[in-house]
Length: 370
Image (cartoon, rainbow, N blue to C red; front, side, top):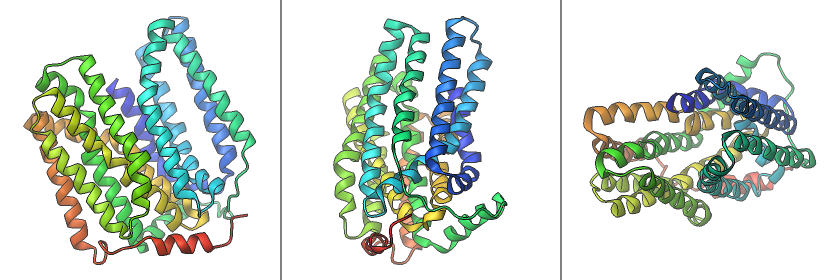
């Protein structure tokens, strides 16, 4: 399972920035129709292999890799398409809604999948999964967004370098990506090793793990639905982001000292509470900071960090857990999270007083995309 998950995420890390070039070049709606159709086909292939009882481990690895490649193009196209259909004036609200839907699906999806596998069988679950893509494809065909596309130079490497050049000169975009790195490498990775905490520290099983994952999901959902909209109104955006990162880090430190199920459930809830605040805020502001014809490239770098880097972060905390025990690794992550936030604030003059409202107002007043 770990290898399959790694194969599904690594293409986003290695290919994501390049796929962002094509997300800017091509019609994003058509790209999403193609990626969703490809994902549907892969689900049906999986269902056929299971139904005919010829499924082998290498099939799982190949399909996971192919899905990862599809996702590497789908992720930046999806996020940029949100800006296309919502417009810069409403993009942050649209991203909050998208994040909320993601957190709800994260909580409900595994439960529905488990029910489907238990009552209908593995093959039926994959057939149903494939059929659900039809609703997404139909919705995409009915949607019309306004996208600004640049004239292709025919040189993807040059266009990729243009995205990096913009990032080098846009200090606040760098800060947003840095905060995203912190919550991915130190926050999300600590949640990934919950199975080790349950088995080695708490002495529990699958039921306990399920409850703890539900607690984490509930925290993320509350963060997405309640805290993120409030965070958008914060006057000092830099201070708000730094405080949210430090909050998660502090609760990780407390989490590392837990030895009971109840305290673990409480601390993991509060660890997860502010992670979507940071990631959703970074996503929305990057869409506003980026030129309209460069959003795909900039968002692909963000997605490489926030999603594609998760297997690497999981590997690193796994090594740390072997060296220092799972709780020692979580303590290290929490401390590094706090130190990293403090270091960024210390190195970036004016970060704590940075207000994103002026940037948002300027983007909202600009001409609509055609």
